[in-house]
Figure: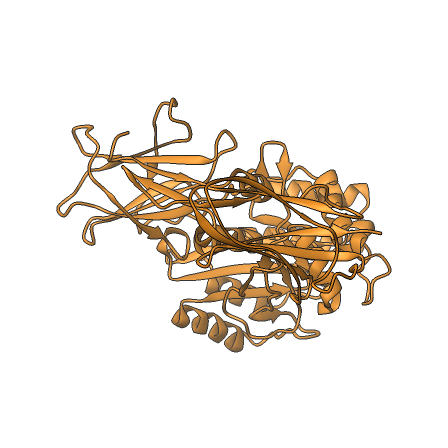
Length: 457
């Protein structure tokens, strides 16, 4: 293998589970004095190289596969998404003579293209009765090059509304996220239908964009809680649905990405920074709104503005003033809310679990693999398969959906190879546990992998 190529690989099951079709920015250090370099990518060893488009800090762009060089700092920022033809990305950088140069992989950038701050927007309650107001809001956000992630109440959408949602997706700058089927108060009569069913409704009724797809698979990354109400049962179902996070509604002046929950394999629920609008928790005070953005910029955080399109007054000045203030800045990453969490998952969370990076002959090993249990759901017992790349001390524990310890089923030093262990649905005292969602966690003392399963009786 050419030592001047970098190969970035991802676990296939994670690739299938989440798509990973949004470009991640990989940072490389360059030889001092470099100039006029060209960057290439491919996704399989026997593919031809494809040259990346080069952009500069003077260009306005977001979410594209590009390379940007900072020759003063001897850095290259290479933004590439995973492809549906393989689980690997091959990268090389050539000099003006077409010869590969020696580059050193440093890290994945915290934000796309190493931007200073994030702006993301969400909108609640897209249904037939608010359809026209959503169409206007989507168009207005798009005119400012701002992404809008729209929470759809799926049982309240007729065919005409689905058609309009599809047109907005096709026009760009719009993401759909799940906002339940009927917008209920808690407790839900049908938690599975509201959380999992609404996601499937979006997939069944829409053709989702490329950055929400992997082959024939389509992805909805965010659950928006009706009325901001939430409980452990909903949180567990969000985990089963492989959403990345839940967005609540408390106007909590939040400017950060929420924490990763390794037990539920998802991010903790997150609140917004501000709401634009005259009702509920919103404000029409543009000084307050603009100052909130300035605070996020100062902190290098996430400015998450949300709205209810049914109450935004587009004939007033406040929405126009604020959108103009936060938009079209070249040091800001403008991104859909779901893609923000997808990026963070792959750049910040996942490398601690599974990502392999080969730089020449150097390897950061993925030293164990934990597979999904089978059968799942199960009603008596289930099997866990795992594979060790080397001799390791392995600990496998069972937890309930709240993270409470149930039982340890493996605690031993093992040699390299493939193993299968069984759980019979009992706790540490030997008593049968009740139906529900459970988590199994495997760690080697340095890293951990978790997956979820469902016990039915």
